[in-house]
Length: 308
Ligand code: RIB
Ligand code: CA
Image (cartoon, rainbow, N blue to C red; front, side, top):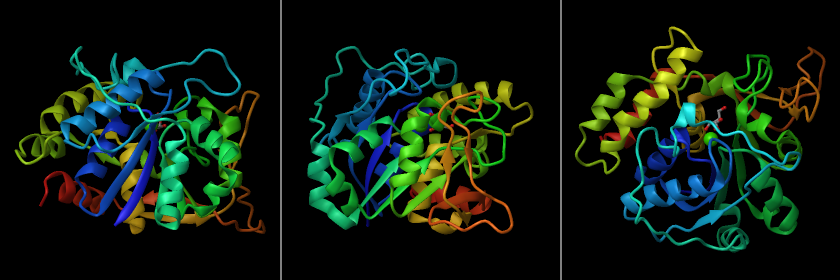
């Protein structure tokens, strides 16, 4: 059983990562920490809590994280990709209420699960960096870290050079890639290939055993509309954060290179990630996913979401 504490900004692909984590019998989601990113921290929190309520898992703590990055006052959010409230066209009922746990719950969860705990971060790095600063002894107890972010010598998505999570708070991202032990990064190199298509979504939508089935088609269509415009000819939409969670349980879905990464903090290259890839450079400890076994990815998605 993989015990995951998920840092995220749901957001459509974060939301599907949450759904997958809740439905996979081999994953135990022990908490969700929400931050600004795709949308505001407040909206991301409501969305995470809403998904938990749909799944009848309101016992899983929801913890509010950062509402802005360290370098900037204002945040940029992305309703054009994720919808006005972050779940495509779906609106959470106005009367929806939920409980928020204090930030220190993160320390409690790490101390409870120690080296069984896996931290996955599919949002901006600000909150996780804060955890490293606040709880330096506890973060060493964690088994491993998985971070969705970066684009290594492939085009970015926030800028020509930078991927959105690393662009959002490059100082915190650089701190995390330099500090977290047992770190796996899933950059755009792999996640841009983690494409779900309409036929895959149709099958999940028809599955009466999946509590999230009614959400799948509207959120997919919304998300895909954006990708059709930004990547002409793309056959579906890439679910970056879903792949990042999947890799925890299925490491062989992707190929890795082993290098230590750097994220550029300022200048025109802000948020750009790189490794020293020269033939004689020293290999590092970080695992960076660079390729995806696509058929295996779809098979695994269907196994969990169709409950096959
Ligand atoms: O670049 C992809 C990442 O940015 C994903 O985590 C997505 O949710 C967005 O935040
Ligand atoms: Ca995300």
